[in-house]
Length: 170
Image (cartoon, rainbow, N blue to C red):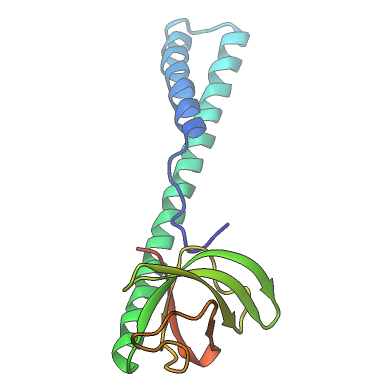
């Protein structure tokens, strides 16, 4: 699971099962109570649907809490990101579009220069498992690689010391 992408709260199967089980429960529980003392098979089915509805409700609660926790963490990461931007000198944002290969000393990725809308392959040094697709990285551009009026390098090398902060895509 990519920690840089907000977890989905709703899924089609969860919605469909919730509606079906909810409707069946709304029908079976009053039918059981209206026919009290109800036959054992009706009581068993109604109890089963109440239990299923409880399990689905817990699943919804878990998914909502997980999404809220992700939102809180994302806000925290973006606050750290803005703090790092203010504390650093010249910086720019790059978004990791894809990760081709992770190695112990870094990762081969495709980045998008957010300010310029330019995509290119890059090598990010250090912490190879830290960068996920959707990561926005605050970096200090290397003046030895990018020159005004000259073509971009075919592969951009991002040193670990040039990475100041990471946050999920907005």
